[in-house]
Image (cartoon, one colour):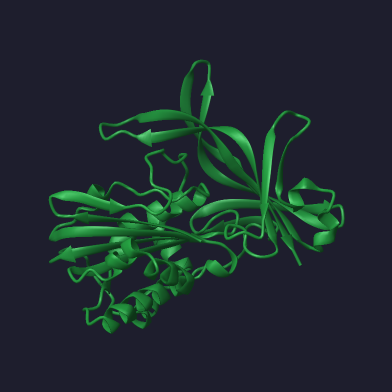
Length: 325
């Protein structure tokens, strides 16, 4: 489990980042339509809304009203960006959360794998942290928006934003999870990482192929995404099919004793690439391993005046996950 918090107070910014603060831009990606992501994870979002308001009621505070408008505009897009990249937690610029009538705003971030990838685990972690707890129990906050996403490696990410003030132009808001569920349609729950074939899920095009691998099955998932390429001395953004990740379907752990993808460690492959693997951590969940390769990642950050600023960064990039029975 990892979490981070930042609170915006009128006239100045005060923040406590427990983990993952920074300004490194995330790789450019074609994020799913936020409204469809909200539908996909409507149950988790509704549960998290109720958990916030239950805790506030226990402390004599008024409820937070859930705004799909704010979620689609702010929380869900940023959360998808983090999850798509399997990125460390780092805050968005809270000045971008400005909204008519708002006079304060705050943000809590979370990721968790396995049993920690649940709304209750997120709330438990936040309430044990002074900064997160302060955001949840700020009396002036009266509106909330929640982003919830699943990363390619199976971790759950959440971005929760809070606002205080007399906000206008929000459209329909909801007082509790039951109201939210009644007003939000359900979405497809197909697992694009292990289901062979072409899929249209959350507004994105996926293609998954699976094949025998030793005594188990390996699935390769590709996605239509926007990538940054460098050729002939210039950068460009290109949209097309791109590798997303490999998933090895559940098998006995003993089958992986001689394979470095199945236990903790680091190594250099014959082609010179560096690899590292972690197993049974908060990131992987129980009965799983995640492997990363050291690679150069090109990114693009939109400029306010138009165009992009291109970046180049060497970093660990998620490649595959091994699941054990």
